[in-house]
Length: 218
Ligand SMILES: Nc1ncnc2c1ncn2[C@@H]1O[C@H](COP(=O)(O)OP(=O)(O)OP(=O)(O)O)[C@@H](O)[C@H]1O
Ligand SMILES: Cc1cn([C@H]2C[C@H](O)[C@@H](COP(=O)(O)O)O2)c(=O)[nH]c1=O
Image (cartoon, rainbow, N blue to C red; front, top):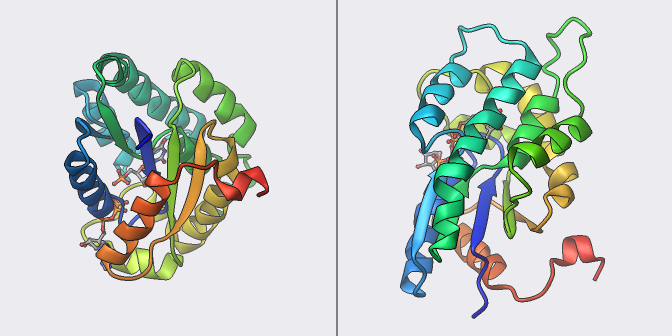
């Protein structure tokens, strides 16, 4: 089976990414892959520190600064972890990647006093530089209504979650709009239903041998 070597799972907060990544990692391991999971932002010492700063809802931050710190965390992860792992033949599953950066940092939250957010095209350009051209072979956007995903969240809201339901609804739309720009194959996965049902949809997308019908027009 010709399986993708670099898979990213993304989607709005609370949609079930971490749950599905654990299940997919197990299934790929059973299929004989040497799997490594990472999370963006995070997975490096620098990434972990940047994650703390970035998710701190009490810290005011300019949106371009926010965008660049997410990019920096990803650069560190790519250069110190992902490239060596891919060269060693590992299969990578990343909890989010550049698509999230484009979507979350280009979306307005309605509380910005008319100031523009960063344009998606600018973020894709910055991302191409920050990622050194590396993009996932397959990006899966887990999708579900915002109210259901947000009701699943517990604990204190982080910076993005504290922007509220309208922001997250716009983020959801932006995921669907920007997915075709990722560079690899992209699929939208219905994230509603029991974890096993969602995992089955993901496995079907991972093992699909054709180019995604969503973008090929087939
Ligand atoms: N299919 C499902 N049905 C019901 N609950 C689920 C399902 N998948 C995950 N959950 C629960 O929803 C919550 C969020 O799941 P999870 O942490 O996997 O999502 P996430 O997308 O990684 O969240 P975040 O964006 O906050 O990191 C958890 O409590 C999890 O147990
Ligand atoms: C990579 C990336 C992430 N975000 C947002 C998305 C989430 O709200 C948090 C990360 O938390 P998670 O528990 O790991 O989902 O950060 C972002 O705004 N920009 C990015 O580039």
